[in-house]
Length: 465
Image (tube, rainbow, N blue to C red; front, top):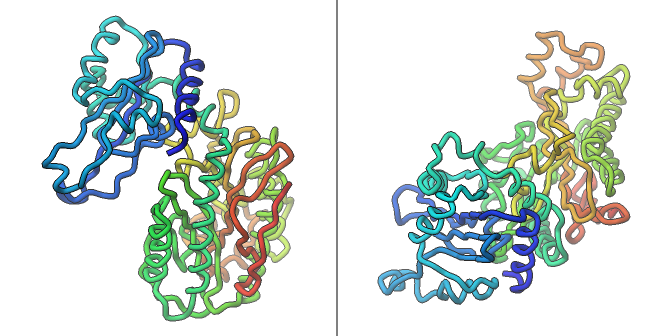
Protein backbone atom coordinates (compact mmCIF):
# COMPACT_ATOMS: atom_id res chain seq x y z
CA UNK A 1 0.00 0.00 0.00
CA UNK A 2 0.96 3.66 -0.23
CA UNK A 3 2.12 5.76 2.73
CA UNK A 4 -0.46 6.48 5.42
CA UNK A 5 -0.84 10.15 4.51
CA UNK A 6 -2.03 9.26 1.00
CA UNK A 7 -5.18 7.56 2.31
CA UNK A 8 -5.76 10.17 5.01
CA UNK A 9 -5.61 12.96 2.43
CA UNK A 10 -7.89 11.11 0.01
CA UNK A 11 -10.56 10.68 2.67
CA UNK A 12 -10.11 14.26 3.84
CA UNK A 13 -10.72 15.55 0.34
CA UNK A 14 -13.75 13.29 -0.09
CA UNK A 15 -15.28 14.69 3.10
CA UNK A 16 -14.65 18.23 1.90
CA UNK A 17 -16.24 17.46 -1.46
CA UNK A 18 -19.45 16.08 0.08
CA UNK A 19 -19.67 18.38 3.09
CA UNK A 20 -22.11 16.36 5.19
CA UNK A 21 -23.72 12.96 5.63
CA UNK A 22 -22.42 9.44 6.10
CA UNK A 23 -20.34 7.65 3.44
CA UNK A 24 -20.65 3.86 3.28
CA UNK A 25 -17.98 2.02 1.27
CA UNK A 26 -18.03 -1.75 0.88
CA UNK A 27 -15.10 -4.01 0.20
CA UNK A 28 -15.57 -7.30 -1.63
CA UNK A 29 -16.05 -10.82 -0.32
CA UNK A 30 -14.41 -14.01 -1.52
CA UNK A 31 -16.20 -15.47 -4.55
CA UNK A 32 -16.52 -19.24 -4.91
CA UNK A 33 -15.82 -21.05 -8.16
CA UNK A 34 -17.82 -24.22 -7.54
CA UNK A 35 -17.96 -24.77 -3.78
CA UNK A 36 -17.46 -22.58 -0.74
CA UNK A 37 -13.77 -23.14 -0.06
CA UNK A 38 -12.60 -23.10 -3.70
CA UNK A 39 -12.47 -19.41 -4.50
CA UNK A 40 -11.47 -17.26 -7.43
CA UNK A 41 -8.41 -15.07 -6.76
CA UNK A 42 -9.64 -12.33 -4.45
CA UNK A 43 -9.96 -8.85 -5.95
CA UNK A 44 -10.76 -5.96 -3.63
CA UNK A 45 -13.20 -3.25 -4.69
CA UNK A 46 -11.20 -0.45 -6.29
CA UNK A 47 -12.96 2.40 -4.48
CA UNK A 48 -12.38 0.70 -1.14
CA UNK A 49 -8.72 0.26 -2.08
CA UNK A 50 -8.43 3.89 -3.11
CA UNK A 51 -9.67 5.30 0.19
CA UNK A 52 -8.75 2.57 2.70
CA UNK A 53 -6.00 0.54 1.02
CA UNK A 54 -6.78 -2.77 2.76
CA UNK A 55 -6.62 -5.75 0.42
CA UNK A 56 -8.52 -8.42 2.33
CA UNK A 57 -12.08 -9.76 2.08
CA UNK A 58 -15.03 -9.07 4.34
CA UNK A 59 -14.47 -5.38 5.04
CA UNK A 60 -16.66 -2.30 5.00
CA UNK A 61 -16.10 1.27 6.13
CA UNK A 62 -18.05 4.29 7.26
CA UNK A 63 -16.92 7.89 7.01
CA UNK A 64 -19.26 9.93 9.21
CA UNK A 65 -18.62 13.47 8.03
CA UNK A 66 -20.90 15.17 10.56
CA UNK A 67 -19.42 13.40 13.60
CA UNK A 68 -15.81 13.23 12.36
CA UNK A 69 -15.63 9.44 12.56
CA UNK A 70 -13.93 6.88 10.33
CA UNK A 71 -14.59 3.22 11.10
CA UNK A 72 -13.46 0.01 9.42
CA UNK A 73 -15.65 -3.05 9.99
CA UNK A 74 -14.30 -6.58 9.73
CA UNK A 75 -13.24 -9.66 11.65
CA UNK A 76 -9.83 -10.99 12.58
CA UNK A 77 -9.09 -14.66 11.95
CA UNK A 78 -9.11 -17.18 14.79
CA UNK A 79 -6.87 -20.17 15.51
CA UNK A 80 -8.90 -22.49 13.28
CA UNK A 81 -8.36 -20.08 10.38
CA UNK A 82 -4.65 -19.79 11.15
CA UNK A 83 -4.31 -23.54 10.64
CA UNK A 84 -5.16 -22.98 6.99
CA UNK A 85 -3.82 -19.49 6.32
CA UNK A 86 -1.01 -18.98 8.78
CA UNK A 87 -0.92 -15.91 11.07
CA UNK A 88 -2.02 -12.64 9.52
CA UNK A 89 -1.61 -9.06 10.60
CA UNK A 90 -4.52 -7.96 12.77
CA UNK A 91 -7.16 -5.67 11.34
CA UNK A 92 -6.27 -3.03 13.93
CA UNK A 93 -2.65 -3.11 12.81
CA UNK A 94 -3.64 -2.85 9.14
CA UNK A 95 -6.10 -0.03 9.84
CA UNK A 96 -3.38 1.95 11.59
CA UNK A 97 -1.29 1.77 8.40
CA UNK A 98 -3.97 3.77 6.57
CA UNK A 99 -4.69 6.19 9.40
CA UNK A 100 -7.84 4.63 10.90
CA UNK A 101 -7.92 3.98 14.65
CA UNK A 102 -11.52 2.79 15.01
CA UNK A 103 -12.13 -0.87 14.08
CA UNK A 104 -15.34 -2.77 14.88
CA UNK A 105 -16.64 -6.30 14.19
CA UNK A 106 -18.30 -6.82 10.80
CA UNK A 107 -21.79 -7.44 12.20
CA UNK A 108 -21.85 -4.18 14.15
CA UNK A 109 -22.19 -2.13 10.98
CA UNK A 110 -25.97 -2.66 10.89
CA UNK A 111 -26.31 -0.97 14.29
CA UNK A 112 -24.07 1.90 13.21
CA UNK A 113 -26.25 2.51 10.17
CA UNK A 114 -29.65 2.14 11.85
CA UNK A 115 -29.45 5.35 13.91
CA UNK A 116 -28.54 7.75 11.06
CA UNK A 117 -31.08 5.94 8.91
CA UNK A 118 -33.84 6.55 11.49
CA UNK A 119 -32.75 10.18 11.72
CA UNK A 120 -33.08 10.42 7.92
CA UNK A 121 -29.50 11.53 7.56
CA UNK A 122 -28.03 11.28 4.09
CA UNK A 123 -26.24 7.96 3.60
CA UNK A 124 -24.02 8.03 0.54
CA UNK A 125 -23.32 4.68 -1.12
CA UNK A 126 -22.13 3.54 -4.54
CA UNK A 127 -24.06 1.39 -7.04
CA UNK A 128 -23.16 -2.23 -6.20
CA UNK A 129 -21.96 -4.62 -8.91
CA UNK A 130 -21.77 -7.83 -6.84
CA UNK A 131 -24.75 -9.75 -5.50
CA UNK A 132 -23.37 -10.14 -1.97
CA UNK A 133 -22.98 -6.38 -1.58
CA UNK A 134 -26.43 -5.82 -3.07
CA UNK A 135 -27.81 -8.13 -0.40
CA UNK A 136 -26.03 -6.24 2.38
CA UNK A 137 -27.13 -2.81 1.19
CA UNK A 138 -30.69 -3.95 0.67
CA UNK A 139 -30.80 -5.36 4.21
CA UNK A 140 -29.06 -2.45 5.96
CA UNK A 141 -30.83 0.35 4.12
CA UNK A 142 -34.19 -1.34 3.50
CA UNK A 143 -34.00 -0.73 -0.25
CA UNK A 144 -35.25 -3.33 -2.77
CA UNK A 145 -32.58 -4.89 -5.00
CA UNK A 146 -33.94 -3.35 -8.18
CA UNK A 147 -33.85 0.18 -6.68
CA UNK A 148 -30.29 0.10 -5.32
CA UNK A 149 -28.66 1.58 -8.40
CA UNK A 150 -31.01 4.54 -8.73
CA UNK A 151 -30.88 5.06 -4.94
CA UNK A 152 -27.08 5.33 -4.90
CA UNK A 153 -25.46 8.69 -4.28
CA UNK A 154 -24.78 10.72 -7.42
CA UNK A 155 -22.87 13.21 -5.27
CA UNK A 156 -20.54 10.48 -4.02
CA UNK A 157 -20.07 9.10 -7.53
CA UNK A 158 -19.13 12.52 -8.92
CA UNK A 159 -16.80 13.26 -6.01
CA UNK A 160 -14.95 9.97 -6.45
CA UNK A 161 -14.71 10.36 -10.24
CA UNK A 162 -13.33 13.88 -9.81
CA UNK A 163 -10.68 12.66 -7.39
CA UNK A 164 -9.70 9.35 -9.00
CA UNK A 165 -9.54 10.78 -12.54
CA UNK A 166 -6.38 12.78 -11.75
CA UNK A 167 -3.57 10.33 -11.12
CA UNK A 168 -0.96 11.33 -8.55
CA UNK A 169 2.77 10.77 -8.86
CA UNK A 170 2.71 7.60 -6.77
CA UNK A 171 -0.15 6.23 -8.87
CA UNK A 172 1.67 6.93 -12.14
CA UNK A 173 4.70 5.04 -10.82
CA UNK A 174 2.52 2.05 -9.99
CA UNK A 175 0.63 2.16 -13.30
CA UNK A 176 3.92 2.30 -15.16
CA UNK A 177 5.06 -0.85 -13.34
CA UNK A 178 1.95 -2.58 -14.66
CA UNK A 179 2.58 -1.25 -18.17
CA UNK A 180 6.19 -2.48 -18.12
CA UNK A 181 5.07 -5.99 -17.14
CA UNK A 182 2.44 -5.84 -19.88
CA UNK A 183 5.16 -4.93 -22.37
CA UNK A 184 7.09 -8.04 -21.33
CA UNK A 185 3.93 -10.03 -22.02
CA UNK A 186 3.53 -8.45 -25.45
CA UNK A 187 7.15 -9.10 -26.44
CA UNK A 188 6.85 -12.75 -25.45
CA UNK A 189 3.56 -13.14 -27.34
CA UNK A 190 5.20 -11.68 -30.47
CA UNK A 191 8.20 -13.99 -30.10
CA UNK A 192 5.96 -17.04 -29.75
CA UNK A 193 3.70 -16.15 -32.69
CA UNK A 194 4.90 -19.00 -34.91
CA UNK A 195 3.24 -21.60 -37.09
CA UNK A 196 2.05 -24.62 -35.11
CA UNK A 197 1.84 -22.87 -31.71
CA UNK A 198 -1.57 -22.79 -30.02
CA UNK A 199 -3.25 -19.62 -28.82
CA UNK A 200 -3.73 -21.32 -25.45
CA UNK A 201 -0.01 -21.99 -25.13
CA UNK A 202 0.90 -18.35 -25.71
CA UNK A 203 -1.88 -17.05 -23.44
CA UNK A 204 -0.74 -19.34 -20.63
CA UNK A 205 2.89 -18.29 -20.91
CA UNK A 206 2.15 -14.56 -20.82
CA UNK A 207 -0.25 -15.09 -17.90
CA UNK A 208 2.72 -16.60 -16.11
CA UNK A 209 4.71 -13.41 -16.71
CA UNK A 210 2.01 -11.38 -14.92
CA UNK A 211 1.92 -13.83 -12.02
CA UNK A 212 5.68 -14.08 -11.67
CA UNK A 213 5.91 -10.29 -11.39
CA UNK A 214 3.85 -10.48 -8.19
CA UNK A 215 0.44 -9.53 -9.55
CA UNK A 216 -2.03 -11.05 -11.96
CA UNK A 217 -3.95 -10.31 -15.13
CA UNK A 218 -5.77 -6.98 -15.13
CA UNK A 219 -8.45 -8.58 -17.36
CA UNK A 220 -8.88 -11.85 -19.28
CA UNK A 221 -6.38 -11.86 -22.14
CA UNK A 222 -7.63 -11.44 -25.70
CA UNK A 223 -5.21 -13.49 -27.82
CA UNK A 224 -6.58 -14.64 -31.14
CA UNK A 225 -6.12 -15.03 -34.87
CA UNK A 226 -9.75 -13.93 -35.16
CA UNK A 227 -9.04 -10.30 -34.33
CA UNK A 228 -12.26 -9.14 -35.96
CA UNK A 229 -14.06 -10.29 -32.79
CA UNK A 230 -13.47 -7.33 -30.49
CA UNK A 231 -13.50 -9.16 -27.15
CA UNK A 232 -12.58 -12.67 -28.25
CA UNK A 233 -11.62 -14.81 -25.26
CA UNK A 234 -11.70 -18.09 -27.20
CA UNK A 235 -8.17 -19.49 -27.54
CA UNK A 236 -8.63 -22.80 -29.35
CA UNK A 237 -6.74 -22.18 -32.59
CA UNK A 238 -3.36 -23.36 -33.82
CA UNK A 239 -1.43 -20.55 -35.51
CA UNK A 240 -0.83 -20.86 -39.25
CA UNK A 241 1.36 -18.95 -41.67
CA UNK A 242 -0.38 -15.99 -43.22
CA UNK A 243 -2.45 -15.28 -40.12
CA UNK A 244 -2.19 -12.34 -37.73
CA UNK A 245 -2.18 -12.73 -33.96
CA UNK A 246 -3.95 -9.98 -32.02
CA UNK A 247 -2.86 -9.81 -28.36
CA UNK A 248 -4.71 -7.45 -26.02
CA UNK A 249 -3.42 -8.03 -22.51
CA UNK A 250 -2.76 -6.29 -19.23
CA UNK A 251 -0.80 -7.01 -16.08
CA UNK A 252 -2.01 -5.79 -12.70
CA UNK A 253 0.55 -5.10 -9.97
CA UNK A 254 0.17 -6.34 -6.40
CA UNK A 255 -1.42 -2.94 -5.66
CA UNK A 256 -3.91 -3.53 -8.51
CA UNK A 257 -2.83 -0.76 -10.86
CA UNK A 258 -2.47 -2.14 -14.36
CA UNK A 259 -1.56 -1.77 -17.99
CA UNK A 260 -3.59 -2.43 -21.13
CA UNK A 261 -1.76 -2.83 -24.45
CA UNK A 262 -2.53 -4.37 -27.83
CA UNK A 263 -0.27 -5.42 -30.66
CA UNK A 264 -1.12 -7.30 -33.85
CA UNK A 265 1.68 -9.55 -35.07
CA UNK A 266 2.18 -11.53 -38.32
CA UNK A 267 2.54 -15.24 -37.58
CA UNK A 268 5.24 -15.79 -40.21
CA UNK A 269 7.27 -12.69 -39.26
CA UNK A 270 6.05 -10.57 -42.16
CA UNK A 271 2.68 -9.10 -43.11
CA UNK A 272 1.31 -9.73 -46.57
CA UNK A 273 0.96 -6.66 -48.79
CA UNK A 274 -2.75 -6.41 -47.98
CA UNK A 275 -2.18 -6.86 -44.24
CA UNK A 276 0.58 -4.24 -44.18
CA UNK A 277 -1.64 -1.74 -46.01
CA UNK A 278 -4.33 -2.06 -43.33
CA UNK A 279 -1.78 -2.12 -40.52
CA UNK A 280 -0.24 1.14 -41.71
CA UNK A 281 -3.67 2.77 -41.85
CA UNK A 282 -4.30 1.80 -38.21
CA UNK A 283 -0.81 2.98 -37.25
CA UNK A 284 -1.38 6.39 -38.87
CA UNK A 285 -4.70 6.76 -37.03
CA UNK A 286 -2.98 5.77 -33.80
CA UNK A 287 -0.29 8.42 -34.24
CA UNK A 288 -2.78 11.07 -35.32
CA UNK A 289 -4.79 10.44 -32.16
CA UNK A 290 -1.74 10.61 -29.89
CA UNK A 291 -0.62 13.85 -31.54
CA UNK A 292 -4.05 15.32 -30.70
CA UNK A 293 -3.92 14.57 -26.98
CA UNK A 294 -3.60 17.56 -24.67
CA UNK A 295 -5.53 19.20 -21.82
CA UNK A 296 -8.70 20.97 -22.93
CA UNK A 297 -9.31 18.72 -25.94
CA UNK A 298 -12.43 16.54 -25.95
CA UNK A 299 -11.50 12.88 -26.24
CA UNK A 300 -14.54 12.53 -28.49
CA UNK A 301 -12.79 14.84 -30.97
CA UNK A 302 -9.61 12.76 -30.73
CA UNK A 303 -11.74 9.70 -31.49
CA UNK A 304 -13.27 11.40 -34.54
CA UNK A 305 -9.81 12.46 -35.74
CA UNK A 306 -8.73 8.82 -35.61
CA UNK A 307 -11.91 7.80 -37.44
CA UNK A 308 -11.28 10.30 -40.22
CA UNK A 309 -7.69 9.08 -40.56
CA UNK A 310 -8.91 5.49 -40.80
CA UNK A 311 -11.55 6.44 -43.38
CA UNK A 312 -9.02 8.36 -45.48
CA UNK A 313 -6.68 5.40 -45.45
CA UNK A 314 -9.44 2.97 -46.38
CA UNK A 315 -10.44 5.31 -49.19
CA UNK A 316 -6.86 5.27 -50.50
CA UNK A 317 -7.00 1.48 -50.98
CA UNK A 318 -10.52 1.50 -52.39
CA UNK A 319 -12.55 0.12 -49.50
CA UNK A 320 -14.25 3.45 -48.82
CA UNK A 321 -15.17 6.34 -51.11
CA UNK A 322 -16.88 9.73 -51.13
CA UNK A 323 -16.37 12.61 -48.72
CA UNK A 324 -14.33 11.38 -45.74
CA UNK A 325 -15.66 13.80 -43.13
CA UNK A 326 -19.25 13.23 -44.19
CA UNK A 327 -18.72 9.44 -44.12
CA UNK A 328 -17.50 9.67 -40.52
CA UNK A 329 -20.25 12.11 -39.56
CA UNK A 330 -22.89 9.66 -40.77
CA UNK A 331 -21.14 6.64 -39.21
CA UNK A 332 -20.14 4.79 -42.39
CA UNK A 333 -16.63 4.18 -41.01
CA UNK A 334 -18.18 1.98 -38.31
CA UNK A 335 -18.25 -0.81 -40.87
CA UNK A 336 -14.53 -1.04 -40.04
CA UNK A 337 -14.19 0.57 -36.58
CA UNK A 338 -17.17 -0.39 -34.45
CA UNK A 339 -15.93 0.69 -31.02
CA UNK A 340 -14.43 3.64 -29.18
CA UNK A 341 -10.85 4.90 -29.32
CA UNK A 342 -10.07 4.30 -25.66
CA UNK A 343 -10.94 4.67 -21.99
CA UNK A 344 -9.61 5.73 -18.62
CA UNK A 345 -7.00 3.47 -16.98
CA UNK A 346 -5.95 3.12 -13.34
CA UNK A 347 -7.07 0.79 -10.58
CA UNK A 348 -9.49 -0.66 -13.14
CA UNK A 349 -8.79 -1.48 -16.77
CA UNK A 350 -11.88 0.56 -17.63
CA UNK A 351 -11.26 2.88 -14.74
CA UNK A 352 -14.24 3.60 -12.45
CA UNK A 353 -16.78 2.27 -14.95
CA UNK A 354 -18.62 0.49 -12.11
CA UNK A 355 -19.72 4.05 -11.23
CA UNK A 356 -21.27 4.60 -14.66
CA UNK A 357 -19.86 5.74 -18.01
CA UNK A 358 -22.16 8.77 -17.90
CA UNK A 359 -20.14 10.06 -14.93
CA UNK A 360 -16.65 8.81 -15.80
CA UNK A 361 -16.51 9.47 -19.53
CA UNK A 362 -19.18 12.13 -19.97
CA UNK A 363 -20.67 15.12 -18.16
CA UNK A 364 -24.01 16.76 -17.51
CA UNK A 365 -23.50 18.71 -20.74
CA UNK A 366 -21.86 16.03 -22.90
CA UNK A 367 -23.98 12.92 -23.41
CA UNK A 368 -23.13 9.65 -25.16
CA UNK A 369 -24.11 9.30 -28.80
CA UNK A 370 -26.67 6.73 -29.88
CA UNK A 371 -24.99 6.22 -33.29
CA UNK A 372 -23.60 2.75 -34.00
CA UNK A 373 -19.88 2.79 -33.26
CA UNK A 374 -19.82 6.18 -31.57
CA UNK A 375 -22.17 4.92 -28.85
CA UNK A 376 -19.38 2.53 -27.80
CA UNK A 377 -16.98 5.39 -27.03
CA UNK A 378 -16.47 5.08 -23.27
CA UNK A 379 -14.66 8.40 -22.88
CA UNK A 380 -15.81 11.60 -24.56
CA UNK A 381 -15.14 14.33 -22.03
CA UNK A 382 -12.53 17.08 -22.06
CA UNK A 383 -9.05 15.83 -21.15
CA UNK A 384 -7.18 17.13 -18.10
CA UNK A 385 -3.56 16.86 -17.04
CA UNK A 386 -3.27 13.75 -14.88
CA UNK A 387 -5.73 11.61 -16.84
CA UNK A 388 -4.38 8.21 -17.89
CA UNK A 389 -6.06 6.97 -21.07
CA UNK A 390 -5.71 4.26 -23.67
CA UNK A 391 -5.55 4.96 -27.40
CA UNK A 392 -6.51 1.91 -29.43
CA UNK A 393 -7.78 2.40 -32.98
CA UNK A 394 -8.44 -0.66 -35.08
CA UNK A 395 -9.87 -2.03 -38.31
CA UNK A 396 -12.11 -5.07 -38.00
CA UNK A 397 -13.54 -6.88 -41.02
CA UNK A 398 -16.71 -8.60 -39.79
CA UNK A 399 -18.36 -10.76 -42.50
CA UNK A 400 -21.74 -10.75 -40.76
CA UNK A 401 -21.78 -6.95 -40.61
CA UNK A 402 -20.82 -6.71 -44.28
CA UNK A 403 -23.71 -9.00 -45.23
CA UNK A 404 -26.20 -7.10 -43.06
CA UNK A 405 -25.30 -3.60 -44.25
CA UNK A 406 -25.11 -4.68 -47.87
CA UNK A 407 -28.57 -6.29 -47.66
CA UNK A 408 -29.85 -3.00 -46.21
CA UNK A 409 -28.05 -0.98 -48.93
CA UNK A 410 -26.47 1.03 -46.14
CA UNK A 411 -23.96 3.75 -47.07
CA UNK A 412 -23.37 2.63 -50.69
CA UNK A 413 -21.99 6.11 -51.39
CA UNK A 414 -19.17 5.53 -48.86
CA UNK A 415 -18.48 1.77 -48.83
CA UNK A 416 -17.15 -0.22 -51.78
CA UNK A 417 -18.96 -3.47 -51.06
CA UNK A 418 -17.63 -5.33 -54.11
CA UNK A 419 -14.03 -4.89 -53.02
CA UNK A 420 -14.89 -5.40 -49.36
CA UNK A 421 -16.25 -8.86 -50.21
CA UNK A 422 -12.69 -9.91 -51.06
CA UNK A 423 -11.55 -8.97 -47.52
CA UNK A 424 -13.99 -11.17 -45.61
CA UNK A 425 -11.18 -13.46 -44.51
CA UNK A 426 -9.01 -10.58 -43.31
CA UNK A 427 -9.58 -10.64 -39.51
CA UNK A 428 -8.71 -7.48 -37.53
CA UNK A 429 -5.87 -5.21 -36.42
CA UNK A 430 -5.60 -3.10 -33.27
CA UNK A 431 -2.71 -1.08 -31.82
CA UNK A 432 -3.03 0.19 -28.24
CA UNK A 433 -0.94 2.43 -26.01
CA UNK A 434 -1.37 3.81 -22.46
CA UNK A 435 -0.71 7.53 -21.97
CA UNK A 436 -0.65 10.16 -19.24
CA UNK A 437 -2.02 13.57 -20.20
CA UNK A 438 0.58 16.20 -19.31
CA UNK A 439 0.44 19.98 -19.18
CA UNK A 440 2.10 20.10 -22.62
CA UNK A 441 0.44 17.11 -24.33
CA UNK A 442 0.89 13.46 -23.44
CA UNK A 443 3.49 10.85 -22.60
CA UNK A 444 3.38 7.18 -23.49
CA UNK A 445 3.77 5.11 -20.34
CA UNK A 446 6.25 2.27 -19.98
CA UNK A 447 9.46 1.19 -21.63
CA UNK A 448 9.85 0.92 -25.40
CA UNK A 449 7.62 -1.44 -27.34
CA UNK A 450 7.66 -1.93 -31.10
CA UNK A 451 4.95 -0.37 -33.19
CA UNK A 452 6.27 -1.10 -36.68
CA UNK A 453 4.58 -3.33 -39.23
CA UNK A 454 6.93 -6.30 -38.75
CA UNK A 455 8.45 -8.03 -35.75
CA UNK A 456 11.87 -7.11 -37.07
CA UNK A 457 10.81 -3.46 -36.66
CA UNK A 458 10.62 -3.44 -32.86
CA UNK A 459 11.18 0.30 -32.62
CA UNK A 460 10.46 2.41 -29.53
CA UNK A 461 7.04 4.02 -29.47
CA UNK A 462 7.09 7.77 -30.06
CA UNK A 463 6.25 10.03 -27.12
CA UNK A 464 4.07 13.08 -27.75
CA UNK A 465 5.37 15.90 -25.56
